[in-house]
Image (cartoon, rainbow, N blue to C red; front, side, top):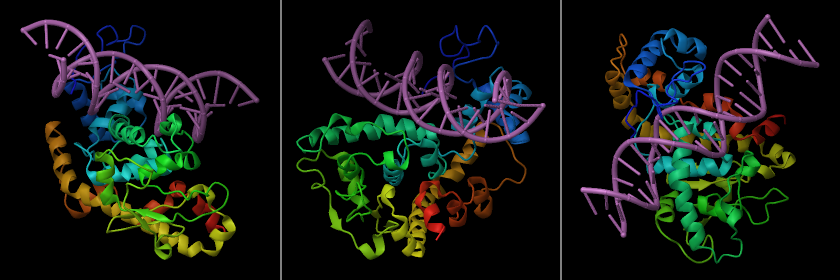
Length: 321
DNA sequence: AACCTCTGCAACCGCGAGGTG
DNA sequence: ACACCTCGCGGTTGCAGAGGT
């Protein structure tokens, strides 16, 4: 979008007077220097990277440039509908924890997702919100983004419903099962149309099969999202259902991966190669097939993901039983 | 053609966490 | 215990380009 400006963002800030460090947009030459350095030496102390790569940048700026733009495993381009759905879903669980959301979307950065959310999704949801303002639960604050994680990540019932996360109306004090499921195939319609009437009524809301959807939530490959009210996990109840819960949460994560992996497979090989070619980077024996691609992208296997249970913190309390 | 407004997004900023001496 | 440093995160800014008038 922006043309690289060798004088930085506004000229006067291009090189800070105190430190002689450049600021603002990165030039292709700087990109090449950083790219070449990172390919040869890998990630180390970012201050050293800046110094040793011959860049008049602070380490922080180098880190940001690498993470958000130069990293070879980045997937560029528009978000797919599946990614949109996943972002909306994860945001409903995690709130503005962009880095954690990004961790579940291979090839996407937290910054990219944050921008996408703020510029696109939030706007659509706002439209939906305003068009359904006749709902008794509607309030201006419904669009505010919580900053505290799992509990705060679940906003008002109204918004949660719009986002495809169904909270049981009485879930504020006791553990309740979500008793609806949203078919995300309809999420396209939800996001694109201007619904009216009672909140929730414009969705294709289906009764949830509690056997498959309870506790852990589930996403089957027909595209059925069922999400548990994470803040209300009762450890006693959870303990009884421990194995079941773990199994179902594994399914949640696994199916998310299947969705995202499907997308990434189609795009990333070309993307990576293009970016390396663009940057004149050649790696001996680099072959983006099969295991190599998997290695470059990181293995998205279930075991690895389950190491990070921060997404589902209640699993910790379950495991102690 | 000129101007204005909107939009997308790259990059910066400030803060907190964690490590080290 | 304290200071200092680095890293990572989320919020915000500001510019370029697109679109509208």
